[in-house]
Length: 148
Figure 1 (tube, helix red, strand yellow):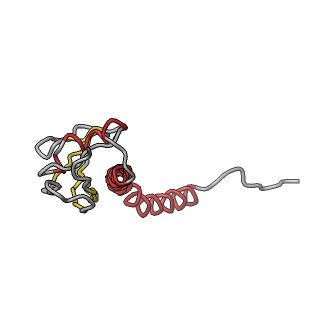
Figure 2: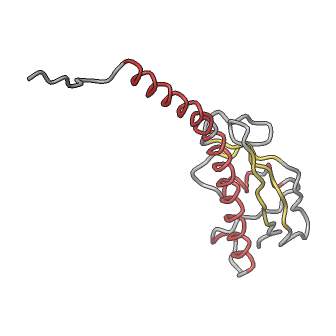
């Protein structure tokens, strides 16, 4: 008996599979390339959220009667976005002044002209946070005024 059985794939079948895989890769690749931009934007939003949260907690502590010796930070500078007091509230990242240039994913430039001087306790000021790839987000800072 002479059985004629196929032992593998033909060249045409292999070429068709390779073409289909190429088409799938060409359509999926642009989506994966864009993920780094989305990740940078999400990181900037996270830092902006950290700043907003830290200043809200700081304001709540100052309203509750905490004194500076207890850890409340005065946020009453003429330009709070570049003041060192704002940088002291956020840990784990480096906040650079508006003239700085972020060099890595742990550094963010903070800029803006938010005025917290005088009797502006409770005033909300917007500062811009920019990452090293240019991704930016806005952070809302709540002024405390002078903490005695």
